[in-house]
Amino acid sequence: MTNWTLEQILHGLHDDIHQRLEIARKALRHPVSKGDASEKIWLELLNKYLPERYRAEKAHIVDSKGQFSEQIDVVIFDRQYSPFIFNFQGEYIIPAESVYAVFEAKQSINAGYVKYAQDKIASVRNLYRTSLPILHAGGKYPAKAPINIIGGILTFESDWTPGMGDPLKTALAFTPGVIDLGCIAAHGHFYFKPEDNEYEFISEGKPATAFLFKLISMLQFSGTVPMIDVMEYSKWLVPS
Image (cartoon, rainbow, N blue to C red; front, side):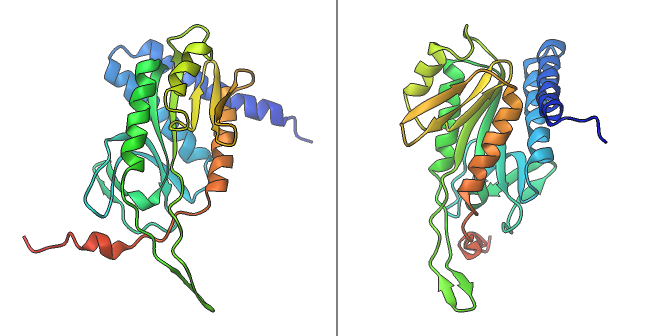
């Protein structure tokens, strides 16, 4: 008979992420090093625990019209049906059709970073996405509408006291729904409820684990990304 308990396992997942983010914040001196370490911790969490149909990387996103997003700290994208991903020396460029979710990862949340994350998310959602009809034995299904790209922010700490109080709620309320999901590992997580046009803030529990479960649930309801029209991208293969 095992001595494990589900409670211990789930608490341990959060405690591991919390400890690693805390070490990155306290032990590393250079701001860029702190930021890079934090991003890697979140990426490792997602690549370890998300189903294998998903992958998470730091990346730029491009559409078939040649427009690029800004660089995004954490991009969750399809690896099952997406045929076109550019990867050179760790620099990823991902087609817009393949993207499920984008997150900005910071050491600490504040009003400036909330606005920064909102702008980054918008730079992805504004990209053009193709979609092809899907052939099947009886004919073909019409082209699927592009899915809603989940947008969020991930931090260890908060510049506000309390960390999940009115200042955070005010910052998010300027453009409600742009950020769908967020985690402040030391304090809690939050998510947008479109049916109520408001955010739910959860301070208790183990935030990193709770965030991961909420994200997986949101991805399940996202379904599958549409079939990419690769020939639209091939139009850029013009003679030089």
